Length: 386
Image 1 (cartoon, helix red, strand yellow):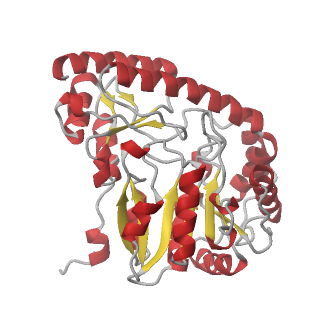
Image 2: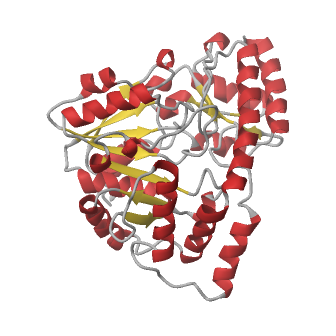
């Protein structure tokens, strides 16, 4: 028989993260600093709202856009955080996580062959999603010397007549970088000069340390050319509930909603009920988790630096991105050897783009005890290999 797999799927690279999780799953006593998922359980009062919805028989489809109550809650939440007003009737759509919203946004605003600027290192699905939408990802390399913040000059150098959009993901996965106000204005200037749309993945917006976060859409002139993507997974420890949202102009959202209608129908009903409870009454829970992440962040960054694995200070999300050149290994060799010899799982930086080579991603979304044990094992490892 002929090969029934399409060329576009065959050309997609497998996720660079899964390999190490699969190996770790076959081993005992592994400390995983690889997975980008909160180790906290969803706060109990949020869980209870979801359970109550199930018991009340709320197991049917909702509106394609999501329940009216949740869309109103999202609108109120965004306005409270950033002073931005989105009409819940035609400017907000509830999605199955940011991943769905990301693809919908790309498919809505790009034609086949359009180029999307993708700052790297970036989440493993970013470039792949651009490909799946039929567009062309154009990697834009960021540097540790710039704290992994993309600059206006970097973007300007990558713009061509086919450029349609800029994708930004700050706070960033995998580096933990957060854009400074000056960098945000530089990006905005490039978007305005070349008439580009900005797709802003803000899923880690509440997990920042020592700084104030600002939504990209709140910048002067950016409201009408920005698609804001966020959700419940990271800040609220609700990854398995699969609730995200997209917010933009009525025109853009009409296109996004059209695709969502055919692709998904609606996000999980009971999860929407729980998400509304989170948005309305979980600020204390978010702050408690953020403070714990901050303690872990300080511990792991200091530990890497003490071992000669130079690590710039991440200011958001829950990842550290140390340089492993002191080991004399490539990032893949480092992760494979560390896992085999000391049962500590990390992810090689090149899984997040070529500009991540020479670095590894370590998630501190695990207990402080596990982080301290991992650093002890890493110290033994570096004595042998450093």
